[in-house]
Length: 194
Image 1 (cartoon, rainbow, N blue to C red):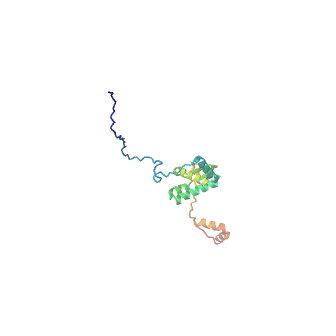
Image 2 (spheres, helix red, strand yellow):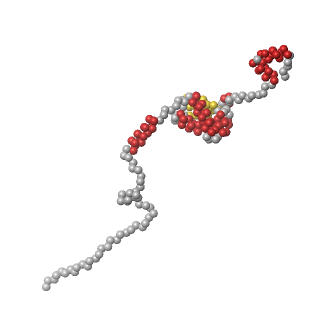
Image 3 (cartoon, rainbow, N blue to C red):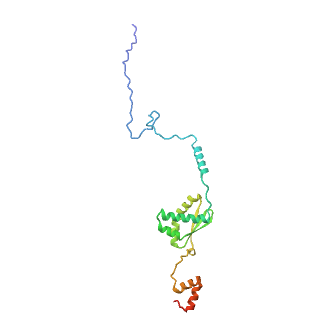
């Protein structure tokens, strides 16, 4: 008898796929294109020619910018006066403004000024206000390389006229200078003024 190779049918085994899941994390996954539009970030898209757009915008602002003012002695004095007014009225720094009143200013060149101080204390105030004054001048004149130097010159002290009371003789002499008839009257009556 011939032997037949008989193979029994293999039992059907169901294949199970094992799927591993990652543990949940607190880091949010990046938004994918499959995410709904409400969850995607709403950042503006950058144009392809962004550098060209920036350059064009910069050129337009340069075209519309005003030309810088020419720095003269009159303008320098006006800048110092306006800065003192700013210190007095807006910044409410009355002691600083009083010290700035004692200073004078000289225009040395078209981009350089010199604050002239009368004392060491005045020099300290000037050095403290040099940078804010320079920034103020740059803003007003639109000159980017404005420089302010500070020097001490005691001879630059502004003379303060002190009025003193006149005595009777000085008053009479002033009156006689204006009206010579008063002197004739005094002489004719032999009056003495003490």
